Each structure stands twice: as C-alpha cells, then as structure tokens.
Image: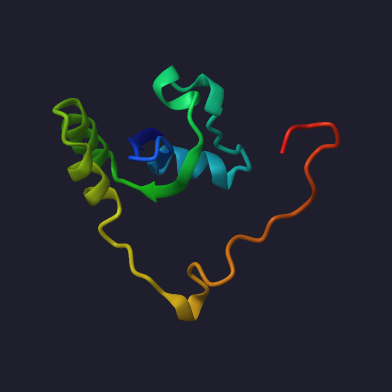
Length: 110
C-alpha cells in the first residue's frame, strides 16, 4: 500500500491510498487495511483531511508511482492512479455522500 498526499491551499490534505494486488488479497481475507492518521509525518498528521481516496495499481505501476513521487512529480503519480475516474451521478457519485453508520463516541471532540 502506498500513500500519495497533497496539501491544499487551505491547509487540508488530500490522501490517496494506493492498493496493490497483495493488499487486495489481504482484504479479501477480511484483513482490513488501515491508515492511522497520527502516524503520518507531522506535515500531514497535524492537518485536517480534505479528501481520502482509494485506488489500485499493478506491481509495475507501484514502481512507477514511487519513482514519480521521489522525483517530485506527485501530480503525475496522482494522475496515473486516478486515470480511470469517471463522474457517474447515475450510480450515486457525490449525490448523497457516504452512508455513515453509528454515532460519535460520547465524550469525544466532534
């Protein structure tokens, strides 16, 4: 699993979680993936998330993504992972938002 990050002008962070075949196989075995926000580097973990996305890449694409990111070409890495994005309002994209189950834990800051 790779994490691509982008700090927006308003100081929030976009996070793109890139899953490979190994991560998908683990999820199929009910071994969930997780990103613990507070374990991210401070330049991200001290900011609020804006958008959290999940994408897929092949093993070869994972190498390309890492190379692009290490060369400072994060926009190109984001573009590679999200190249199949299509806005599909007929399938519910952004129309109603996610289905949130449960309520915040009592006594926690909202």
